[in-house]
Image 1 (cartoon, rainbow, N blue to C red):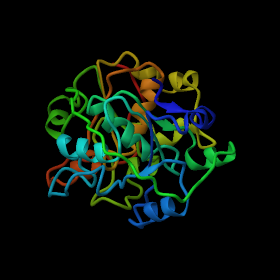
Image 2 (cartoon, rainbow, N blue to C red):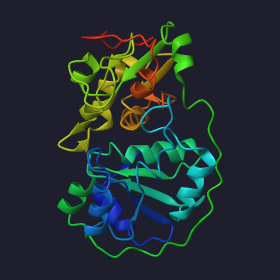
Image 3 (cartoon, helix red, strand yellow):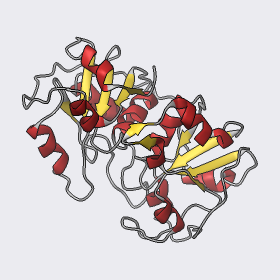
Length: 283
């Protein structure tokens, strides 16, 4: 199953009994904005999941701004949203798939493969003539048994041991100005993990839609020969966008650093690099 689905293809599936559409619109500046947008109008049959409370675990001194929830708890949240073993899940947002990618990655982490992101989100949906409704659906809960896939994540300790190994490529998915440390609007320090390259998630898009797999293969060609690819961002959310793009262009097995930059700089002894980093290179 491809990581994303077109609005036209989704329109043909709306109403299917095995389909669950998930609205994950969110704003870091206004926690309630996503739910308000959902109540004002959403895709037919869509349920709402909140990035902060449904798709993240509790905050702690370390672990980042959006730590992964416990797998058992995550499975309960998805099950309450009507997602079971055979459900086809389509997640959408209004941010080019940046937040919806979290649902795609988390469900795959839990062993559920039938998940996609709506290409272009709400804007592409309405541009294609898709309906928006205000009715909140009554959803029958389902059971999702978590079957966590080992090897999809690394932590800070792993990066400290292996981040500089030959064949390991660490990718920072944030905007270039945050990667360089020119600005840092969210975390206590700016810059990037030493040795990391910068492949901003926003460059996976063209006009708000995902670039064709052929174009993404060109973008990520230097990673194809790497022994291990690790992707991080600010808090482990937008990094999933790069992971979707890598999957789409045939580079499988890349891993997420869930705590990402917000975890890295939560340690007083964290090494930080500033300015332009290394160019992409493959193993």
